[in-house]
Amino acid sequence: MVEILPSILSADFVRLGEEIARVEQGGVSMLHLDVMDGHFVPNLSIGPPVVKSIRKATRLTLDVHLMITEPDRYIAPFIEAGADQISVHQEVCPHLDRTLRHIQSEGARAGVVINPSTPVSLLQDVLDLADYVLVMSVNPGFGGQEFIPGSLRKIRALDSMRKQYSLPFLIEVDGGVTLENLAEIVRAGADWIVAGSSIFHSPDPSATVAEMRHAARQALSVRV
Ligand code: DX5
Ligand code: ZN
Image 1 (cartoon, rainbow, N blue to C red):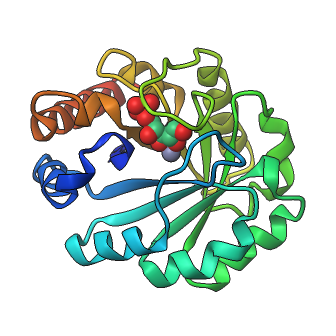
Image 2 (image 1 turned 30 degrees about the vertical axis):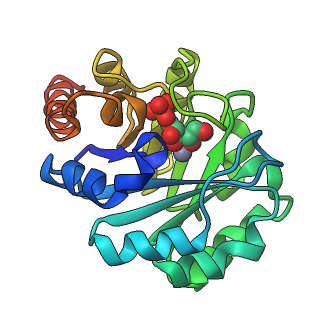
């Protein structure tokens, strides 16, 4: 079952509650929350207090994407704030095995993220531990960028690795997803698809989400 995860980075923060309610009406079950520290990525976004407020406003699964240099320091605060799952970047985790176990021991699902320049092969020894792998299909930091086509090869590689070794991790994709490229991404093997600007900058986010979910189901029905 493919899920569409709206990224609130492109939502109107003055009306965040309404924006979330809209995508909820479109039938999503998960929400993607981008955390940026101005160090790992050249942008700043939200912290635990905002996650806490969102937790009060919705029962959707909260997927927290940490684009920060020292994720270990913030795992507990984000889980206390209401995160259901947390992903950390491979590029900033010298002790990735420990960090993923830390997230799981705090009671959340643990994901590992790779930038467009990071090869899938570097994840080989944590694939049996991670609950999900997030493939960045843009360079992280901003919404509204164009999908990097080479990401499809990485999704396919992860999909065949999990089949080959019978591993249960899910594959998430983040950046530049549109109604036009969605089918190709699903057919490559993605389970969770993040979309920010193509949802929240559309005239009717609720209808767009419903349309994306429909397109994902259609693509799955022809997946081999
Ligand atoms: C980018 C973030 C994304 C972003 C995606 O660094 O991780 O989640 O919101 O936005 P779009 O879908 O507009 O590329
Ligand atoms: Zn993200």
